[in-house]
Image (cartoon, rainbow, N blue to C red; front, side):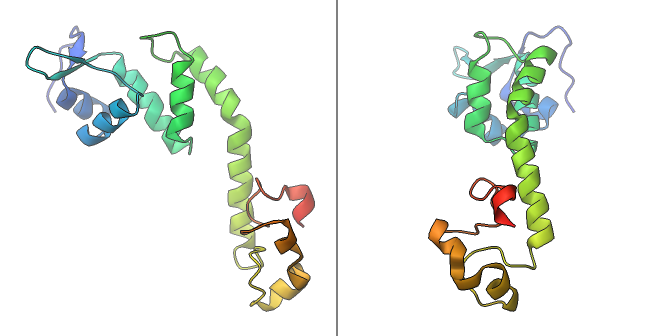
Amino acid sequence: MTKVAWNSKELTVGQLAERSGVAVSALHFYEAKGLIASRRTAGNQRRYTRDTLRRVAFIRLSQRLGIPLKTIKDALTELPEGRTPTRDDWARLSAAWRGELDDRIEQLQRLRDDLTDCIGCGCLSLDRCVLANPHDRLGTEGPGARRIDTRICPPSTCR
């Protein structure tokens, strides 16, 4: 690993990739999507301010939580220009995502528990589907696996 001077205010894309553990191509992608920014040198090379490390860490952690990049970008745009998320910012932003994360946890638990059971897709090919979804009653509510996706079928109405 190339040691970057502690007082270096800017990083090359290679240094940022090495220090953050994110591929150069991913950094370019993040920049193209407006999640991070760089300035260009006279030789047209990218230079990132050192605080971009925190933004990249924020992006990666948010992605690991399953937050879509569009939602991450929206969250980052709420911050004042040129500032990276602080601990308080992270607490505020992650609190806003709590409901969505709780919903995903519910979906995953339901998927785990019901994977071998009728998922409400309308196939009626499994013996249990005839009992769990007689005459494809869930089909009248719309397409898809109705019993698994909590955005379509809240827990209180699907059992």
